[in-house]
Amino acid sequence: MRYAQGGGFTAQEQQRRERVRLDAAERFERGDGNGMIARDLRVTVRAVERWRRAWRDGGSAALESKGPQSLPRLGERQFAQLERELEKGPLAHGWEDQRWTLARIKTLIGRRFHVSYTVQGVWKLMRRNGWSCQQPVRRAVERDDGAVEMWKKQVWPQVKA
Image 1 (cartoon, rainbow, N blue to C red):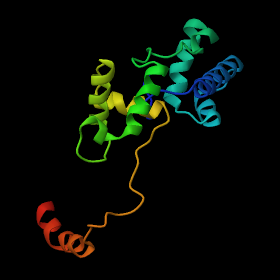
Image 2 (tube, rainbow, N blue to C red; image 1 turned 180 degrees about the vertical axis):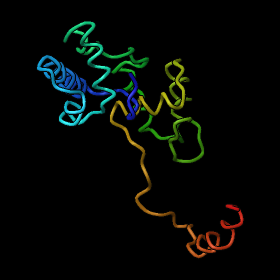
Image 3 (tube, rainbow, N blue to C red; image 1 turned 90 degrees about the vertical axis):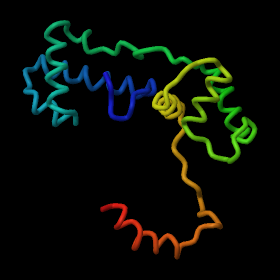
């Protein structure tokens, strides 16, 4: 099953979701309606309908967690090594500036561990391990606010059209 957050839930989050499904199973046994269950458990009616079908076919055991969909390609030790490599910075790995991008991390993983990831897979890997997208704390010294405003007023309307 795919989730909007991209998967990779922690063990606690997986257990919490399983508890919600098992709570729904108890409500199915009592005869509660799908809409009421969805509202009380703060899930969609379609999810409750899917759970009810699974419950009818296999009982509460059908709603228990089946564990992760797949094993990660990088183990915990390898990810720790990757973090150490990332701390060295892009310059140490041959890039000319100090920006880590998903494509660069993908390349680094391929070079270092001989494992292939997609850019999207790298994003999921990083999120799963607590990394997030970062923005600079302050603006670049070279930034010219006047030029930016002029571009917004004069150039952007032409480009947009």
